[in-house]
Every structure is written in C-alpha cells, then in structure tokens.
Length: 236
Image (cartoon, rainbow, N blue to C red; front, side):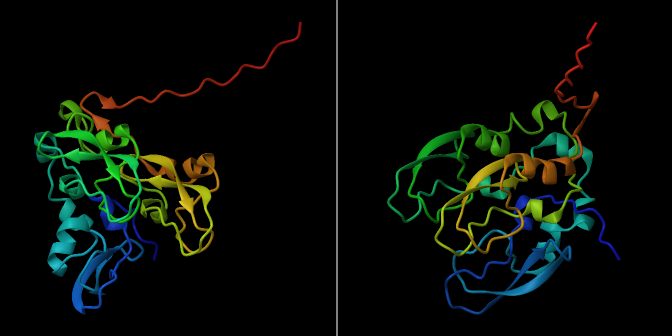
C-alpha cells in the first residue's frame, strides 16, 4: 500500500542514519523517511547528525505524525517552533579555511556573521544572512503569529540534506532545502550522494517546490506573485 503524504515537524528527521567515525557500539534510533517509522541503528559514539535518539519514544515524539497531531494551533501561535540546531553554538570546524558564514546567536536572538573553516562544524551554519533569518529568527517564521501550518506532499527525497557523494570531482548541482523552501547550489563530487541532486535550479523547483502547500494565515491563503503570461501580438 502507498504510504500517506509525509509531514515532518523537524527537517533533521529527513537525514539518513549516521553512525559517525568512532568505533563504539551504542543502540540508538532514527526516523526513516522511506518507511515513515523510527528504527534502530548502531551509533559509533561521536559526531553523526541530529536524527539520532536514545529511545524509541523520543524518536516518535520528535518525528512521527501521530505525536505532532497533539501540537495545537494555540501552541503554534504562542511560540515559534524553530529547529533545534538554531540553539547550537557557533562552530568553525577543524579545517583552516576562511569562509564567511552566518549562525543564529541564541543570546542576542539574531543571526550573526562568523568565519567557517570549511569542514565539520554543526548545522547552525548558513551560506546567507537571509537563509539564517528565515530558519531561526522569530520575526521571520510565524511572524505576528499569523502562520499556523506548513505541510509537504512532494517526493520524500526532497527532504533529505545535500549529499556531496564519494568521489573527488567538483560539479555544481542544486538541492532542495526543505527548511527554507528554496533550491540551493552545492558542490557534487560526481558519484554517490542521494536523489536530492539536480543539474539545474529549474529542474529542482519543478520536482520539489510544488510539494509545499501554502501556509494559512488568519486572513486566508497567503498570496504569491505570479509572472504574467505574455499576450500574443495581433497583426492587423
């Protein structure tokens, strides 16, 4: 039977299980977007990603639709549900690059610039100030407590993070960032990776953007600007 449309509360629930580089054998749980269930995996003890929970119950609370139904509209308007990684501290990583990035400072409640080394670090790391604000600042999402719902009904692979792959090439590709609802460029290695990988921005938008249902405000559906179709010229 076909699975129902996927609705995620947190974008990290779309990440693949990551056991990390260490060698411990720890039982953990992750949310599998293909089966839409929380499943067990073995964690190495360090690094990995946020789609990792100590108990099955915790995984279900964070990622499954049955638990998200308990979140009422009142709670959504009282406070903003921002991703957990917005509360992580600035992390430049271990490499020696000098790349301008942005992070959300939970003390100042604003997005600020920092220098990223180029590898590792954490998810509180954005290529643009706009992307950081759209994801983490209170004044951008649920602004004036108007937005009440956002659901996704497109292909599940559009919710997976960008995956560079395993090879050494440096090819510009596009992936769909489900947190901000936009297609972004990334460097693809040439092999491996996942299906959230498109040769053009247009192809990415066609495959993934249409899956978002418009957010509903108190005044009704939020209007989006559409390009006017050119009228054919009449020859007299």
